[in-house]
Length: 395
Image 1 (cartoon, rainbow, N blue to C red):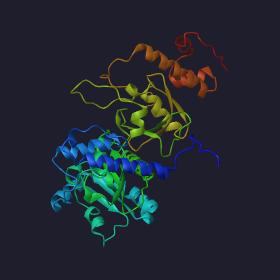
Image 2 (cartoon, one colour; image 1 turned 90 degrees about the vertical axis):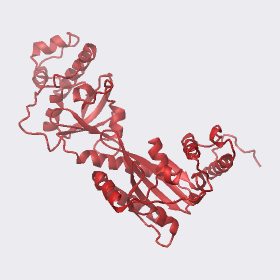
Image 3 (cartoon, rainbow, N blue to C red; image 1 turned 180 degrees about the vertical axis):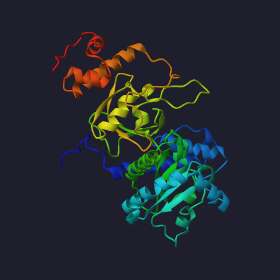
Image 4 (cartoon, rainbow, N blue to C red; image 1 turned 30 degrees about the vertical axis):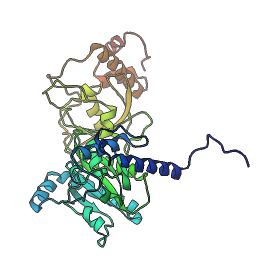
């Protein structure tokens, strides 16, 4: 019999078994007198250990009984009214989730940022008290009330998590398995989270991907529902546009940013503002091209890809599409930014100008006259601003 290959991948079930053994061993430390000061045990995720530590700091112990408390009808109505837009965006996405996981006896929960359940969809077993305890609108599933769970951990960490059975802090929750992902609003604030829960089910950490994907779909629906003048789809060159996985940025008719989704906030960071000052960022603070260029592209070529230069020198690809607030009377050569904008770096402006000229030449297929007209420049000015570094032939 040949010797085992030491480089062969370890089966997933073996890795899960090892992790469960390490989690069980770590839970024994929670019973000790020095549990609140213990170091992170091997094999335990840092976010999970932080959640356990927070529960201990509240004076809680794993053996305590968990009371699943619910809001009063008045408080629940107020919470649902405050998150009306979130509910409207989430319901159709949750229905799609149930189609993916319902046959596996998982159901879906939507909570607000405080951990209150706003919506439940999927097969909640009405004969199982464990399912009824959490699968109802209005119940408080925050970490403060029920200890470590996907809901409490997501809202504390603002990151997606998978929690399986004994990873929950309280013994009363040892039958649950759940995946969760945060939902961020157009301004980047955490509005709540999306949860997929099963009871007495096999471990399915792949559901973490589904929860994250659906949370991002809800964010996109929230952004698109905002009244806007222009919707900008952004991604790295070669990345998807016009479908999931893209960045979205919504602007008003003056070019001020109304909001963006999580991917766009990573691709196009917002400029830092002085403490105490909060104002909408203008498109020209974020993107190294005039606002009027975006408007013209949205009007004339909404389905055509465009290069999107950033002040860092990086380039994205984009689709610019007109929204309901883009009025026909707005001129294509409108001012790039309000007078209150801080002065831009001259070297970055020059770099951006060269990128714009090169893009205009490419779009005009080398026709200098057309490129100059598109940019609102004379032929002589276009050559001068290029610094005579290139001399495309006129046609």
